[in-house]
Length: 311
Image (tube, rainbow, N blue to C red; front, top):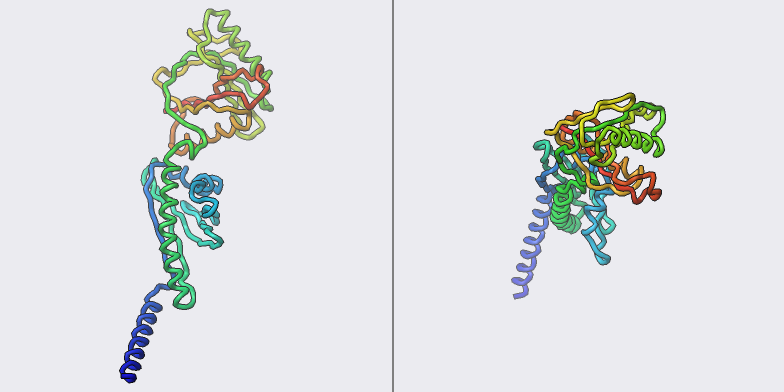
């Protein structure tokens, strides 16, 4: 009886050793975790957002709680159409690669691949196997958040953008060049001239004053101040006749609230939108000065919209 028990014990041990040996050698040198999503967004804008850690903070802000701290993403080397990333979770860090695969101008796929080393020893390998399984579920959830976030234009560009028809087609304008960025007195001095010229010639102002300041070298500035009016007026002296096509379209932002820095940032973001979507422009973009900036000294209360004529 005792001899039979010993044989059975040895047999069980041999079987267990064989099972462990098989598991040990069948476990690959590293576990590869990969997830892919499809989304409706411009590939260039996706890359720009995902290479910005501040955007990742917004994407992940709902991921955790006080008891379960949210994961963090650290951006590494930025490559052509991809970037190295590290996902940090509870003190551990796992390197990986995010690839942006362009499908069309307005859609792409995002592939996230991580490699988890199997580690020394059987139990460490088994532990890392389950870590890899957890990471696959975790990164799938994060990519789901990425899709929701990036499919909203305002999350990518920090502004809302819509296509609108051109309503104010008749304008008078003053165009000059300068070595300095124009101050408020200069801008509103020009607006006063345009308003006086319109009134003197029987025209009514039909919209907010327009301002475009462009520079290619930060030294020479092209300054255009415009005023939409109710009737077609000829130019006179420095005042020019301008006309926009009645069938034209423009990209339009939401109302931007803030001073020069905020307006400039919104302008740059609209430029990104314009370039990402490969628009062509028949005219310069401009600010619509909703707030009279000479009267409102608190720049945080300035309200501006930005327009970009496009084909």
